[in-house]
Length: 215
Image (cartoon, rainbow, N blue to C red; front, top):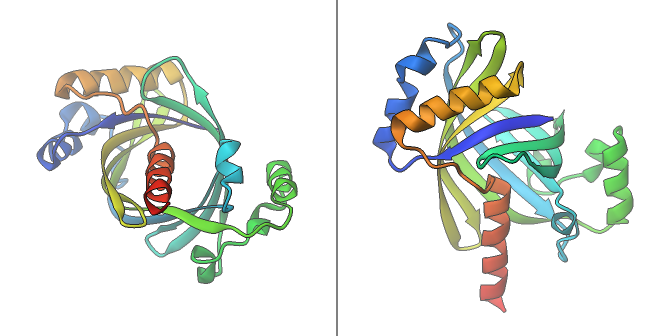
């Protein structure tokens, strides 16, 4: 399960300040910082079968690596900006999968089998993309391990664009209350507002706007 906090960032200058924040850097694991280019393509059927069932089918390029991810059950955790989702990720060897994905990459999981049954052989088409740069580092707070990510880029659906400029703090292991404490302290220090919508939710809305525009 993926558990993360997400906050909007108003400017590039603020993003850089947060990256250098003393509180976060005091917990940073030495050598964990890096910058990586991300490009993700989200796929669905023409009639949006997966989206209607709150399922995200994504192929993402992380630097030189391709990863397929299936996400579902976007859970309300009762705190604005806090997300919890079930997900499966698998490595993808064939670069053509980024253009024409094979849903059978998830066949070894129960959830993947359920998706394949629901698709009933329907082809997948590109719905929207995200293109962004991620600056990230890992922190350890009393045994709660998190990754701090600062993302800058855009969501693309046809000729429509929406900006990405946000802070994510994803918990890998440990205590959820500690994750909330860390996020709350950073948000208070910089006047950050929680981001109530995931990239998937924003991309979904943008793709619906593009589809309506074409009608």
